[in-house]
Length: 229
Image (tube, rainbow, N blue to C red; front, top):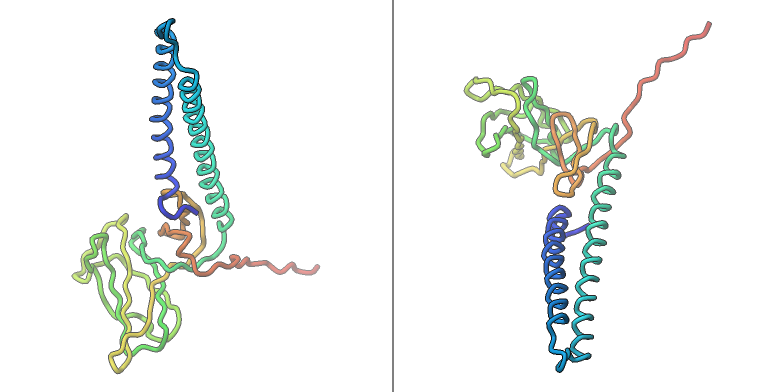
Protein backbone atom coordinates (compact mmCIF):
# COMPACT_ATOMS: atom_id res chain seq x y z
CA UNK A 1 0.00 0.00 0.00
CA UNK A 2 1.15 3.57 -0.71
CA UNK A 3 0.08 5.69 2.24
CA UNK A 4 1.44 9.19 1.57
CA UNK A 5 0.02 9.56 -1.94
CA UNK A 6 -2.34 7.55 -4.05
CA UNK A 7 -0.97 5.23 -6.69
CA UNK A 8 -2.30 7.39 -9.49
CA UNK A 9 -0.70 10.54 -8.07
CA UNK A 10 2.61 8.77 -7.58
CA UNK A 11 2.53 7.53 -11.17
CA UNK A 12 1.83 11.04 -12.48
CA UNK A 13 4.72 12.47 -10.45
CA UNK A 14 7.05 9.72 -11.62
CA UNK A 15 6.13 10.36 -15.27
CA UNK A 16 6.64 14.11 -14.89
CA UNK A 17 9.97 13.58 -13.13
CA UNK A 18 11.18 11.19 -15.81
CA UNK A 19 10.29 13.65 -18.55
CA UNK A 20 12.23 16.41 -16.80
CA UNK A 21 15.27 14.20 -16.20
CA UNK A 22 15.23 12.90 -19.77
CA UNK A 23 15.32 16.50 -21.03
CA UNK A 24 18.20 17.31 -18.70
CA UNK A 25 19.99 14.13 -19.79
CA UNK A 26 19.78 15.07 -23.46
CA UNK A 27 20.90 18.62 -22.70
CA UNK A 28 23.82 17.23 -20.68
CA UNK A 29 24.94 15.05 -23.62
CA UNK A 30 24.69 17.97 -26.04
CA UNK A 31 26.76 20.23 -23.79
CA UNK A 32 29.37 17.54 -23.18
CA UNK A 33 29.68 16.81 -26.92
CA UNK A 34 29.98 20.50 -27.72
CA UNK A 35 32.62 20.88 -25.02
CA UNK A 36 34.72 18.04 -26.48
CA UNK A 37 34.40 19.34 -30.04
CA UNK A 38 35.39 22.88 -29.14
CA UNK A 39 38.08 22.24 -26.55
CA UNK A 40 41.42 23.96 -26.97
CA UNK A 41 43.87 21.39 -28.38
CA UNK A 42 46.61 23.08 -26.36
CA UNK A 43 44.51 22.86 -23.18
CA UNK A 44 42.29 19.77 -23.32
CA UNK A 45 39.69 18.91 -20.73
CA UNK A 46 41.21 17.65 -17.51
CA UNK A 47 40.87 13.84 -17.33
CA UNK A 48 39.57 13.97 -13.76
CA UNK A 49 36.93 16.50 -14.71
CA UNK A 50 35.95 14.44 -17.75
CA UNK A 51 35.62 11.31 -15.61
CA UNK A 52 33.46 13.24 -13.14
CA UNK A 53 31.16 14.39 -15.95
CA UNK A 54 30.80 10.84 -17.28
CA UNK A 55 29.96 9.64 -13.77
CA UNK A 56 27.24 12.28 -13.50
CA UNK A 57 25.85 11.21 -16.87
CA UNK A 58 25.76 7.57 -15.75
CA UNK A 59 23.99 8.59 -12.53
CA UNK A 60 21.25 10.43 -14.43
CA UNK A 61 20.75 7.44 -16.73
CA UNK A 62 20.49 5.12 -13.72
CA UNK A 63 17.92 7.45 -12.18
CA UNK A 64 15.82 7.23 -15.33
CA UNK A 65 15.95 3.43 -15.26
CA UNK A 66 14.98 3.42 -11.57
CA UNK A 67 11.96 5.61 -12.31
CA UNK A 68 10.90 3.25 -15.10
CA UNK A 69 11.04 0.38 -12.61
CA UNK A 70 9.00 2.35 -10.07
CA UNK A 71 6.35 3.07 -12.69
CA UNK A 72 6.16 -0.65 -13.53
CA UNK A 73 5.77 -1.53 -9.85
CA UNK A 74 2.97 1.01 -9.38
CA UNK A 75 1.14 -0.34 -12.44
CA UNK A 76 1.47 -3.87 -11.11
CA UNK A 77 0.08 -2.74 -7.76
CA UNK A 78 -2.97 -1.24 -9.45
CA UNK A 79 -3.57 -4.40 -11.48
CA UNK A 80 -3.18 -6.57 -8.40
CA UNK A 81 -5.66 -4.47 -6.44
CA UNK A 82 -8.28 -4.83 -9.17
CA UNK A 83 -7.65 -8.56 -9.57
CA UNK A 84 -7.93 -9.13 -5.83
CA UNK A 85 -11.18 -7.17 -5.58
CA UNK A 86 -12.61 -9.13 -8.53
CA UNK A 87 -12.65 -12.21 -6.30
CA UNK A 88 -15.50 -10.61 -4.33
CA UNK A 89 -17.89 -10.47 -7.31
CA UNK A 90 -20.95 -12.61 -6.66
CA UNK A 91 -20.62 -12.53 -2.88
CA UNK A 92 -23.06 -10.92 -0.46
CA UNK A 93 -21.54 -8.06 1.50
CA UNK A 94 -22.23 -5.68 4.35
CA UNK A 95 -20.40 -2.35 4.25
CA UNK A 96 -20.29 0.62 6.61
CA UNK A 97 -21.28 3.09 3.89
CA UNK A 98 -24.25 5.39 3.33
CA UNK A 99 -24.08 6.84 -0.21
CA UNK A 100 -26.79 5.44 -2.46
CA UNK A 101 -28.14 6.49 -5.86
CA UNK A 102 -31.87 6.98 -6.27
CA UNK A 103 -32.95 4.63 -9.05
CA UNK A 104 -36.41 3.52 -10.09
CA UNK A 105 -37.87 5.89 -7.51
CA UNK A 106 -36.24 4.20 -4.54
CA UNK A 107 -33.06 3.74 -2.51
CA UNK A 108 -32.52 1.03 0.09
CA UNK A 109 -30.19 1.13 3.08
CA UNK A 110 -29.77 -0.84 6.28
CA UNK A 111 -29.22 0.62 9.72
CA UNK A 112 -27.90 -1.03 12.85
CA UNK A 113 -28.80 -0.23 16.47
CA UNK A 114 -26.57 -1.35 19.33
CA UNK A 115 -29.56 -1.63 21.70
CA UNK A 116 -33.33 -1.25 21.81
CA UNK A 117 -34.21 2.42 21.36
CA UNK A 118 -37.01 4.51 22.79
CA UNK A 119 -36.75 6.78 19.75
CA UNK A 120 -34.99 6.27 16.41
CA UNK A 121 -35.13 8.81 13.62
CA UNK A 122 -33.91 8.63 10.05
CA UNK A 123 -32.80 11.46 7.77
CA UNK A 124 -32.09 11.33 4.05
CA UNK A 125 -29.55 13.95 2.94
CA UNK A 126 -28.72 15.12 -0.58
CA UNK A 127 -25.25 15.68 -1.98
CA UNK A 128 -25.09 19.13 -0.40
CA UNK A 129 -25.82 17.79 3.08
CA UNK A 130 -29.38 19.13 3.15
CA UNK A 131 -32.11 17.00 4.73
CA UNK A 132 -34.71 16.16 2.06
CA UNK A 133 -36.69 13.65 4.10
CA UNK A 134 -36.94 12.70 7.77
CA UNK A 135 -39.10 10.36 9.78
CA UNK A 136 -39.20 7.66 12.45
CA UNK A 137 -37.26 4.44 11.86
CA UNK A 138 -39.52 1.49 11.00
CA UNK A 139 -37.85 -0.68 13.66
CA UNK A 140 -36.28 0.47 16.93
CA UNK A 141 -35.12 -2.89 18.27
CA UNK A 142 -31.47 -3.92 18.64
CA UNK A 143 -29.96 -5.31 15.45
CA UNK A 144 -29.87 -4.58 11.72
CA UNK A 145 -32.93 -3.43 9.80
CA UNK A 146 -33.69 -2.43 6.21
CA UNK A 147 -35.19 0.87 5.09
CA UNK A 148 -36.41 1.77 1.60
CA UNK A 149 -36.98 5.40 0.70
CA UNK A 150 -39.43 6.18 -2.12
CA UNK A 151 -37.61 9.30 -3.31
CA UNK A 152 -40.20 11.70 -1.92
CA UNK A 153 -39.30 14.74 0.13
CA UNK A 154 -40.88 15.55 3.47
CA UNK A 155 -42.97 18.13 1.60
CA UNK A 156 -44.32 15.44 -0.72
CA UNK A 157 -42.32 16.20 -3.87
CA UNK A 158 -40.84 13.43 -5.96
CA UNK A 159 -37.10 13.63 -6.62
CA UNK A 160 -35.69 12.53 -9.97
CA UNK A 161 -33.62 9.40 -10.37
CA UNK A 162 -29.84 9.71 -10.52
CA UNK A 163 -29.19 11.78 -7.41
CA UNK A 164 -26.90 10.40 -4.70
CA UNK A 165 -28.23 10.47 -1.15
CA UNK A 166 -27.06 9.36 2.28
CA UNK A 167 -28.95 8.04 5.28
CA UNK A 168 -28.38 9.22 8.85
CA UNK A 169 -29.80 7.43 11.89
CA UNK A 170 -30.16 8.88 15.40
CA UNK A 171 -31.31 6.64 18.25
CA UNK A 172 -31.80 7.35 21.97
CA UNK A 173 -32.82 5.60 25.15
CA UNK A 174 -35.75 6.60 27.33
CA UNK A 175 -33.25 8.63 29.38
CA UNK A 176 -32.33 10.57 26.24
CA UNK A 177 -28.93 8.91 26.00
CA UNK A 178 -27.49 8.30 22.55
CA UNK A 179 -27.40 4.71 21.31
CA UNK A 180 -24.59 3.66 18.99
CA UNK A 181 -25.87 3.24 15.44
CA UNK A 182 -24.59 3.13 11.90
CA UNK A 183 -25.80 3.09 8.31
CA UNK A 184 -24.98 0.05 6.19
CA UNK A 185 -25.16 -1.06 2.58
CA UNK A 186 -26.05 -4.73 2.09
CA UNK A 187 -26.35 -6.69 -1.12
CA UNK A 188 -24.61 -8.64 -3.83
CA UNK A 189 -21.31 -7.44 -5.31
CA UNK A 190 -21.76 -7.18 -9.07
CA UNK A 191 -18.61 -5.35 -10.20
CA UNK A 192 -15.33 -3.70 -9.25
CA UNK A 193 -13.63 -0.49 -10.40
CA UNK A 194 -10.46 1.45 -9.58
CA UNK A 195 -10.61 5.08 -8.49
CA UNK A 196 -7.27 6.77 -7.72
CA UNK A 197 -5.72 3.36 -7.27
CA UNK A 198 -8.29 2.17 -4.72
CA UNK A 199 -10.71 -0.67 -5.55
CA UNK A 200 -14.44 0.10 -5.31
CA UNK A 201 -17.29 -2.40 -5.35
CA UNK A 202 -20.66 -2.08 -7.06
CA UNK A 203 -23.46 -3.14 -4.70
CA UNK A 204 -26.97 -2.42 -5.92
CA UNK A 205 -27.22 1.32 -6.63
CA UNK A 206 -24.08 2.10 -4.62
CA UNK A 207 -20.37 2.17 -5.42
CA UNK A 208 -18.36 1.83 -2.22
CA UNK A 209 -14.68 1.48 -1.23
CA UNK A 210 -13.46 -2.04 -0.55
CA UNK A 211 -12.09 -0.70 2.74
CA UNK A 212 -15.66 -0.14 4.03
CA UNK A 213 -16.61 -3.83 3.80
CA UNK A 214 -17.19 -5.34 7.26
CA UNK A 215 -18.67 -8.73 6.26
CA UNK A 216 -18.64 -11.11 3.31
CA UNK A 217 -20.38 -14.37 2.66
CA UNK A 218 -21.03 -16.70 -0.22
CA UNK A 219 -24.28 -15.94 -1.96
CA UNK A 220 -26.92 -18.52 -1.09
CA UNK A 221 -27.95 -20.71 -3.99
CA UNK A 222 -31.33 -22.33 -4.40
CA UNK A 223 -31.37 -25.95 -5.46
CA UNK A 224 -34.36 -27.73 -6.92
CA UNK A 225 -34.95 -31.21 -5.48
CA UNK A 226 -34.63 -33.93 -8.07
CA UNK A 227 -37.81 -35.98 -8.23
CA UNK A 228 -37.78 -39.73 -8.28
CA UNK A 229 -39.39 -41.75 -11.05
